[in-house]
Length: 268
Image (cartoon, rainbow, N blue to C red):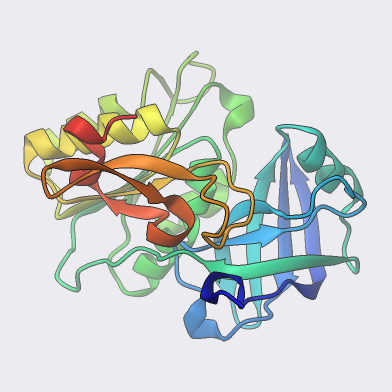
């Protein structure tokens, strides 16, 4: 068997399931060792009753605790609608993971900004909570198209020294894009590190802004996946490495990349 296919889906119990607007926040009994569940990693979740899909759907690990992990799923199609409508406390899901790399935050980084777009904000919550527990809570910028696309704001606020909310239509927080408050914070306070998760255009914009301001940057790519383990090559994206554009697999080479890989020739 190929190394990439060595892992198998595991059946695990749903401990909690709540709906927050269009989002399902699902807590599972963790079938992995605690040290494996690092912020930035993800899991593949099989949709109950979706016999058309051999593989699961990828979801970032949005929170973790003693014996449990959470993922946050937005309704975006048939599969996530089934998940949203059917998953309840006490039911079971089959999961594969944790997969991918994760955020490597330098020990000396104190001024940290996290920027999340839509569901990407939920995927940064585990990192925010880990940093807060270490005594270095981040500034968190949560952006979305509208108020309906924001999620987990109470949790993000508790884990951050400052939460900035921004929506494209101005229905919550300030009107505009994530890059506006990010640019303001970089100018006013600077940053030892910026970590971002969200749509690809947002990641490119954040990476390029950080490069211009001389701030270290990490971005977590959100890409459609089939297998999640590198066997199908369905999640390849272009990144800039050693002065050349190269195709890499998000599930194996990422999902977290250095910001400079998303600038210039790495733009898709």
